[in-house]
Image (cartoon, rainbow, N blue to C red):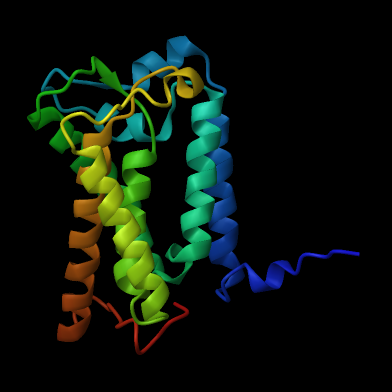
Amino acid sequence: MFTLDVRGIIPHQPRYKHAALLMFVALLLGFGLLPESVLQQLQFPFNGEFSLRWYSAHFIHLNFKHALMNASGAVLIWLLVCAFLPCRLLLTLVLVLPFAISAGLNLTPQEFVSYRGFSGAIYGFFAAGIIWHWWQQRFMTLVLALFLMGKLVMEQMPHFDNGYLLLSIGGLVAVDAHLYGALTGAFLVIVYILLARLGLFGCRLPWVVKTL
């Protein structure tokens, strides 16, 4: 009889980190059930006006299937690389990525009238996790890095079809959000590592402490 040993899949990290992920995923899925009238008040408008919707838009979705796809993506990158990120870096990413992505979208000409979704932030967490994970397993990290860079380059090609998920999520894929998210995530983890080297703000190096 086939059995699956989940202990070999779940990274060895403190339980509270995994519990926080589950709560976050439940939050994403719960927001996916909000009525459309509420979602419209939380989505990001491309009008140049700064508001809390620069943040809230990244935790709502076009429909529940869209929310389910992003929640699944969040779990996948957590299992691959992100569980190893320090808690203070994870919190910084949660707080900074949405605003940074919204700022980038607002400064770049877009074909959208509004934006919803967590995929840009997922790319940010993924990029940060890949860089951090270099000290855990270098071959796997290199493979994941090549995959991420290849996908970002492909999405930025002039003839890339960003409507490939139109039937599933009911909208176009905001590929620029993916790019801004990845760049921001990479920047934040590099800054964290530099601060750790300088011994500032309690930041700790990945090759010294791997479980915090």
